[in-house]
Length: 554
Image 1 (cartoon, rainbow, N blue to C red):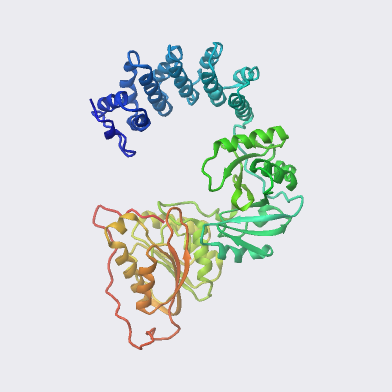
Image 2: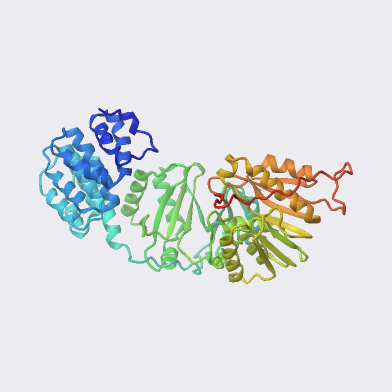
């Protein structure tokens, strides 16, 4: 007999040799361990499901339920006909719990014929638990005939009735879903003044606020900036380059339930006609409750109320062109277009793993500022986003980009050409020895890889790059970057002689480096206040060993 605890580790995937023991553990384990072992066996794939099928014949009902769930889990990933047939056979099982597990599993498959099989099963008499499972399954996988059957159903059980309504909504959404979702036309002007909403990465609000002030009195909050009284098109507002998106902010009334407050807010804003023109048809929206997880039940309840109230919207996470982000803690929500052509970053034709996000590159360029005599250097150029954004921002003399990855240089060259940025030299050189001189501005988003942190090389790499820059920067020059080691780099930069300005943490997607602006004192000798030039360590190469490449995250 196998020890079930061995297979409950969330990261464990059984090898082929482990599968028999894992199945034995699934058969003998306690109920609270079953789900973890099922997930582990599910990761083993078809081999696990094929060995599980013969066990269904003689297993106890509780074990059959577990095995059916396992088979269904693998069937969703493999679309194997044999697994599909095994689930269909369990609809005739003499235990209703096994039947229910098979119904739930079949409802999650995309196999043609599932609707027919479930409708045949629906013709039989069922207890309430099986009926609930059947209704949900047909709502997920059914078509017009399932919708017709659901139209004949009603229940005195509140949960069952709610499931019937949800299934009907789901099917109507599926039937009306277009084969291809057209991009939104953001050139349609608003019918009345609204509150403009710009979203951004956490930590970039002050930079975005400066850009958004061109549209009026800009107010910032975590992750966003708003401007009241805007009445033009959203396309006209799609200007700030540090903005992740642009939309409208609506307020929520606190004296109503959350669902009623959302509906009332949409009615009060009178945006339905405008959304329909922008959407070229019935708007399809995705609902999100900020800071509250998936909230699937709340989404369905809100969608049900929307239908009852006759709102001309379809809640559809699969093909939504809009997002309705509900922030209940601050009594507001954002209506954000999601499918549209964004002209701001049309130049981005090539990418590399771990490249900067263009809005972050735009923020760095804006912080760096513009001088017509700028000699700009990006020591870790990647796909060239920082150089592109600096070039679009204003005049400069020349720009350099260096990287040890030839693929990155190819991507940078393509992006710079697409953006029509000229007078740029790209070099396959180390950031700590690159032949650059008279630099007035460094813009870079340096490597932030976990491997560099763990092997202890990141600090040395950043120090060496800073030291090389210090030796080759003019008095009055600026170094702008996101430092993955804020205290370390600020201390070392100060030691070199930089004046250090720390602007706070920035969310770059799972990591929060610090935006730092390092100024070279405007003195010819660049000495510290003591008058002694700081000791600068010799250049350190950041080349990886032959045949190896560092994994980086930007």
